[in-house]
Length: 239
Image (tube, rainbow, N blue to C red):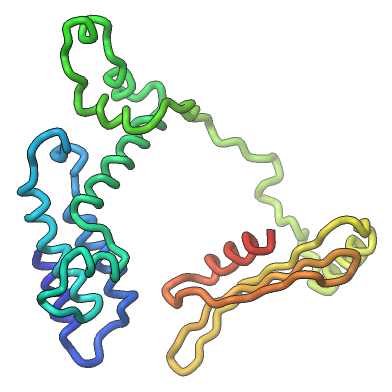
């Protein structure tokens, strides 16, 4: 509650931080604190309506710090406009994440044995435990196998071999001449520019076939991102 009130006081000033920064702070600080250890104390099978009222107070206060709203505005409308979950939705999402963690746990994890329902408990009519109930939210999946990392013998060697850029460019052009005409070559890149105390981060991609460009695109992403994010998005868009 104190963190949410602190964000609300920041939003009361005339020249405050942008709404995107407030939203990120609300998710990281308020949302994570409100649902902390919810895997242990939250169970929808029990009557816990009081938890929703208690948790909604700091969440609503944090959402009101993101953008101005009338006091009579319904909480559901505020959550929808801010793109943030209410207490009930946040707890349900936390429960699903916990179920996914249990399903993906290694077979040697001590929780795995507790997820299995023993024949004695099944015949005696005992209800499933909290762990079993959470794990049943998701279907059975193949568990991941933990293996030691394997690196190639030359993974620490510079792939360029210390060759200058001019030589690398010449080799690339030679390779490009050997590419068949029915193959597709995709070029992507990310950029970051600082201008007028503002950060502009974007990406671009272009698709070539037989030396001719037939598709291209570019766009900006949020200034809170990094140029590495732009490069990854550009590569995804190009593919």
